[in-house]
Length: 261
Length: 311
Image 1: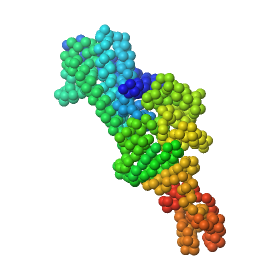
Image 2: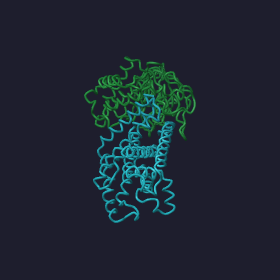
Image 3: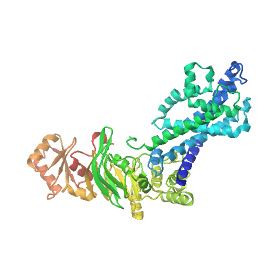
Image 4: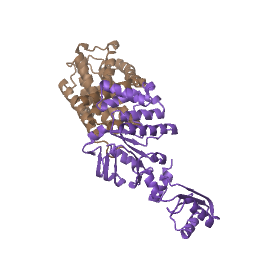
């Protein structure tokens, strides 16, 4: 058992080192959502109000969604490194190492989770500076919410990235699939304002629950009528994350047979 | 060390190995020689536990492949043809992660990394990122990585790919000294005749079939006498005439006719007889001792380098 922990730890450490040795990744993951938020959020925020009963301005509504986007970006970028591992050959050494494959999957996912989590926290600290009132006294809940959301997204990214031989293909999927599920998580508009079929999609979108969880941890839950309960949000996010991890581990465990060309 | 019985392997639409049997003894340097597409890389992948045989039985280090892969993986060191290093990490960091994957940690790991780097002349560059190292140095890090957990069996796939002649010589000197010092069994795939010559024993593969097995000398002796190469304008006509006038076996390719002299006749004598009889039509005639390439040609009836396989 301790051997498995060593394996997970060493692969986690590798992810950290790889990240900070590629400054473009740091800049890209943190910079783009930040600019997105600043430009669009402040522009839209002064132009619209999301319903008269809501005390929040749009910027405040948009803030948790931006954090989710940061988590999404960072997790996705970290799982792209899986495709690099495959292309550059590092993966072949892993596949013949005397370790259970799930330990590799978990080390890699936890690495991505940590990076996404740290960037989420960093971004969060900018919140008050933009005039957003965050319940920082609630920090264990905030940290917990960010962490399990980051884990679920990284596990999802890993599961998708495992299939891809090229980064280009992965980008296509990201645009086709990941950005829409982010938009339909309630990041841009609440389900109450959406048309019927969109509302159904939003209800079955696991990211809606991760976002609701982040939102509740930041602002406290009472004023958030249209969103699911915290307990349900935690459960859905955990189940989603664990399912993606289990599917990734299964895919990794069955690799080797006529898989490499 | 390795027992292979009636091994076959199918890709979706192609049979890469067709019923191969041989064994590798403890402590030998064993070469898998074959042109591209012969199945040697498939065999490498099976031995390194990456693929599972479609049929047949393979045991590695005394453990049956498939059932006891974890035990096998603990015992083998593998050097892939394509790099397996993390180029963003330093040489020492690559070795550190490798050690931990194999259950080595703490002071023991530190000690082994220091020793490995020293042995391969990498001590001064231990903290440089692998992406900045030359091809030869990278290959040394790969070797150090494959040997860090002190495997009983080292498997290398085309280890001299991308190496200049000097680095290739270093590699083989190192493999030979490694075998002497620590009794490691070494299996190496290659498409280079001069590398195969350095092995204790070789298996020659062609289109998924084992066409030769033995020491390089044994295999070459099978040819019997010498090899004579004849060049001329009309090779086809020449071949017919030679077959009619001399009772010898000939093989023809685009540029030359190849004739093997009988054990009883020296190559020089046969060459002289040929030149005397057909001197008008022959542009050049040479003779030499047989090589492994001739063995391959003798066994398969075609040259080692077909057009698409030529590099």
